[in-house]
Length: 277
Image (cartoon, rainbow, N blue to C red):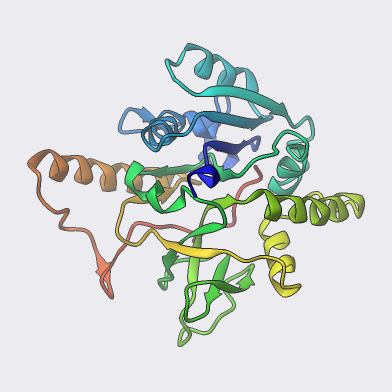
């Protein structure tokens, strides 16, 4: 089992992050600071604490700023880059397709706008896992349905499930086996050949699930702090959430004071359409 341990991460960081306004006019969304800590710095710290050895970054918008930041950052990770020259007119499916020949090992797929605690990666360190949070009324975006054993049986690219059904919001972190990745690359090739470059890669997961060739086990992110930062409102909420998290961590006490619905901490967002990546 140790041989299957995921030690490579692929970060999609090509999009413009335009909904963060002036913050991304001269920088990149992943360099946006949450209480003084850039999102990318937090992600690297989480990867290092979790034993990752390699980081591959797909860049586009403000790529020089990302390279400069990572070049000056003291890290034990081996870092390499893939350029997406069409980042303004494509989406994260195309960014992922560009990495098709760069990875021949199990890997963690994540997006550049996620600020999270390192402990949440503990369940994602072996292949074919998908990070999920129990869906709440304010959440929008891709959801999945699970069977009784915690495996994904359906993807909904928009939150189309009824409020009475139990669905789970994707956190946009996936660990993939080499076998799954090889199957996924065939679907990616088909989308790109059809010029469907503005789709999200979740469309591939949906198609693979329908065809019975995607087998992933759910990992719950309900018990930890994470936030997807697409807008200035998201940034303000994340700063409040993680400021509170650090205060209580310093005191050695359980985090309190955040809204909880059905025992799940309100720490996820999906209320806005996603940016390209």
